[in-house]
Length: 160
View: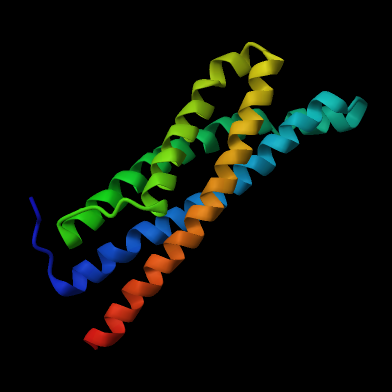
């Protein structure tokens, strides 16, 4: 079912997804930085270690990861819904496949959290590897998304 949307609102809806996903990519990079800071605790000693622990990077990293997972799922659902509502169909291509892959990778990463809390080093290595792949796929998806945004902007320019 396609829901009719007024033209001004349709323009806003078309650009909510790309803006949300760009902010989500920035959040992913920041969460990675915070995770790296938390990981530094393992290799430091003395006052530096106490200072790192006092910043509670573990709690912040976990919270950012939770927000990231929600935004990733919401972004994927919102992008699919907006595309279907605007076109009456989905376009199966690199952008859609990458987006669905990102939701899976984010869920996989989050599913490792209980094992990380138990101190399993193998889970930590997988978590880091999955998130590194996730950021790479996310960067690629961002490029394919910019191509879509350029097409939307061209359509807006023609309509004006």
